[in-house]
Length: 234
Image 1 (cartoon, rainbow, N blue to C red):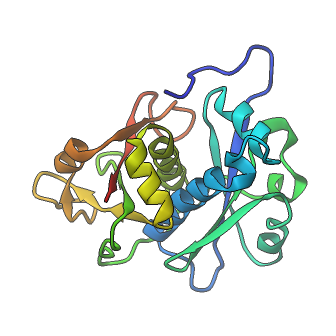
Image 2 (cartoon, one colour; image 1 turned 90 degrees about the horizontal axis):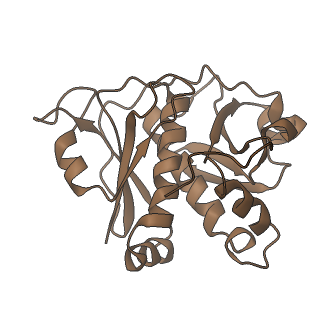
C-alpha cells in the first residue's frame, strides 16, 4: 500500500498533471479522466521511470516513498506548448490531451507549470458513454455518490491507474502494459445503473474492483472518501 505519511522534515512530492482545455471545442469530462489515467500509467511504465538505471527512476522512487499526490492543472494555447518543456509524457485519449510530469517537490514545480491554474477545471460529459475497447484494458469507475470537478475526478482516475500498476495481479498488469495501457472509464450509477449518467451499477463495479482510491481529503471531499475504483479486464 502507498505510504500515508511523508518523510520527516521534507517537502511533500507530487506528480503534476496538465490537461489541455482550449476555449473552443474543449474535451469531455470522461475523456480527460481516461487520459489522466493513461498518462500516469504511461509515465510509470516508461523505461526512464521503470528501469532502475532510468533517469526518472530516482524521482519516482522518492515520490512513492511518501504520500502519493497528484496535482491536476489546466492549460491552453501557448501555455499548453510551454507545459511540454519539463520532462514527462503526453497522451491523447478520445480527443483529450493530458501531460504527466516527472514527480518532484511541491516547492520546486517548474515555472511553466506553477503558473497554471489548479482549480476550475469542470467540463461537461458526453451524452452517451463510450463502449469499452478490446481487452486488455483498465476499467476505472468514479463514485457516482461523490461530487467531484473534472480536475479532481481526473486526479482520482490517475490514482486508480497507479494502484493498478502496483497492486493488481502481475499477469494482468503485464497484459495491460503489453496491450498498450488502454483505459476505459466506466460510468457507474445506482443499483439500476442510473444516476450521474451511469450505465453500470456502482455496487457491481465495487464487486469487480481490484483497487480502491480513498482520498486524503485535501480538496473537495472528506478524508477517507472512496472516490474511484479500478480493475483490469483481460
